Length: 218
Image (cartoon, rainbow, N blue to C red; front, side, top):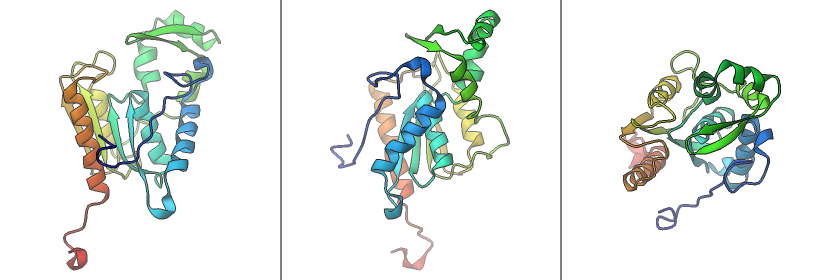
């Protein structure tokens, strides 16, 4: 779709996840955030007003929001797919027995099943994530000013769709939209892909919209 529409794009997995090399046991939100900003600095050009529509699924939606807060000059829009900001506190820890949490916080690594995959959960991941929580705070208190489109499935078995609504309420911009479907967590049906394409296009059009109230706008 991007090639057909002559959009430049780049795809990457986070450190220690998917096709990306690295030891997941030393991965943190800070590491993923710094890596993402470094990557965007290569392909974006703030001096030429060239910014990126960042698409992130799951934790990628969390990272996209953090990048938009820290480097708004790099981000022209956000498309979040089943975004799970603050999942370490709101979902992961709340779903573990207290003895498992205690063991993790003493430095032991625990394998935790998340969806159809197993991830090593560490003390460093939990403690580092606490420096990046974004769902707590006043309404519209999260300084994100770019267009934001949050897609979520009401049948998501991993992240409740209410998370998308909570995130939207925290974001400062008026240009934020939550789109719900009957999708599950991975949103991998044909209709889901179509909704993603529409969301990306919507962000692009919002970035380059003309102010029709101006006599010189044409």
